[in-house]
Image 1 (cartoon, one colour):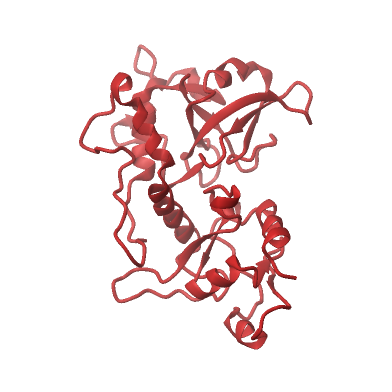
Image 2: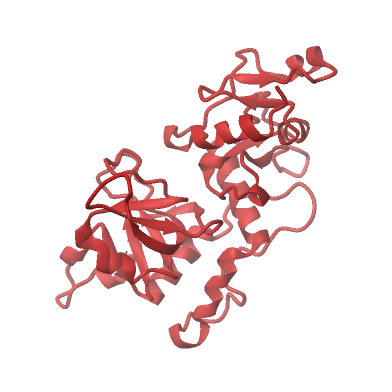
Length: 299
């Protein structure tokens, strides 16, 4: 098993869904198989406008032939492992490449940098994830204490491949994932409730808005931004109980079972459509919206 880098772009010709699967041609089969049971980092190429660089982490569960595309393969992502970085990491840092394994013996950038799938050293993996998950924002929970920023259990200790590899298990920590998911979603929506359109900051400088999963974690929903909405507390409650939902075009749907339709309509922004994230690629995925309508929304 080994860490790896998977290159992905939102306009890819491949049938990727980063939180669920990664499609690739046979020439990368060996490299992807080496990552089974281990963590990989997703990377968006420099040539992509507004590139995020290294933007997420996930764990590869298995590799299978793609049943819908002969000759292609799918890396199946372990359920619940995908996590967007609140701080996308640039290819280049102040001291050179963040992924230092891409330097060749002469100190130049190796041709490996062009590979869609490549191995990643433990030290490079830890460096990228630490930078990506660092808590640099003020988007803290409205109640309770903030979760420590570091991925590892003891941020002062160096990452040693032989002795401390198990620390990556911290990536599955629910408190850490909740903190990161909140940061990513609120940043995407500019701290504004997608339904009401309101952006409220309390006296402590914290946003009075919550990060809601469209498909809940307990119902196998991933911690991906495309499965998230920024919602005020009351709206979040209504959404979770199926009193409101969204169409694929983000039209706001109100259940016929509500007892105060006029009151709810008064909360909804005048356009009657949920606000979209600042970045088009972060829009709620129709797959998750359909799940909410089919499993939560009270028609």
